Image (cartoon, rainbow, N blue to C red; front, side, top):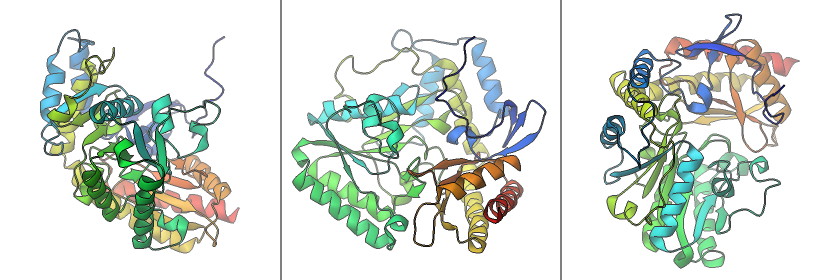
Length: 418
């Protein structure tokens, strides 16, 4: 009898039978408020009617048209549609299936275009589990342990983590930029540095937003030294942070943008975008893949983008995200074990720690499990697993946010009071 790998562990005990909007239902038809969204994937909610209809219609006409063999209309329409929301000048796209694959493609492009080998990544960043993407990841040793040596040419520098360093955000930014400058004169010469890769909000690393001043500082340094700036929008893109792209909060433009997760409401699809002149420097044959740009995924992505636009989901993410943080901060005010509540839009983390700032993984785990028992599905993150994150679909309503905060308050009380 075959079974799943024993290494695969479920974050919740739910055996999902169906999904509808912000809710999942198990085989006994118990309803759960899903504030995981498939790790930020089901941006339009579970089984949005317009996404379902688009996918069903496409399945009946063309399931797979391998896009380096033949072209198909859904991918052409999606490319045109993405051109309406991508940063100005990022007008060429390459499609693959997962965030990790897109990260690998972005690094390949950066190295080929610049003729340089080194990539600067940030402590706490998560970019994937494949060998190249894993080499760029430092959100936790579980991604890197036991598989070395990792891909060479990767250097790490601090991310501005004000809470962890017990300092102001301004001091954290000054420190992180100074360390970046030091890296360029001690470890990786600008002439050897192809690119900087960064998440606008650390995902697996603890849901820590990059301050706008920090991203602006990186943009300035990238321009000064001829280094490419790769912004990993796998989790932050398509409205998640209350702007269409997470980097929009800083008013900068990346050289290469990576998107995935919420792009197609659960269908596998990812992409990198870059200016024509830059994308044209990829070496012949370096871009391809069997399933990239799948016709059904492309149709689902088109429907997703239409729903995001027509239902005002970017603005809703900003509005409901602010409401969510306000409610969570009230809970934190009653329970000092929650040391920090932070995030952007509908990407919010609750960090559990002692009064001295020591990570409290045990309490975070108990609260996470108590919430699931009460019908609220959440995930943990951070190197110590002491951050409980909330990532509801972008369609979430004020009433559903309030329901989630109420269930969260009960779960925290249960876990803290034993």
